[in-house]
Image (cartoon, rainbow, N blue to C red; front, side, top):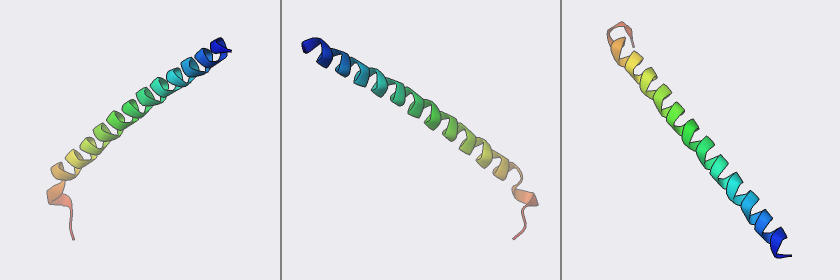
Length: 50
């Protein structure tokens, strides 16, 4: 019985670590893309007409 609980907790921990790493990578990637998009807007500011 204790072994089943240990395996379940081990699987949940591994899943949490995996999801944490994936969300960290997605956050960093999204941030980099937003910075690049903002830099493009600033560099082309003179060409934008309102």
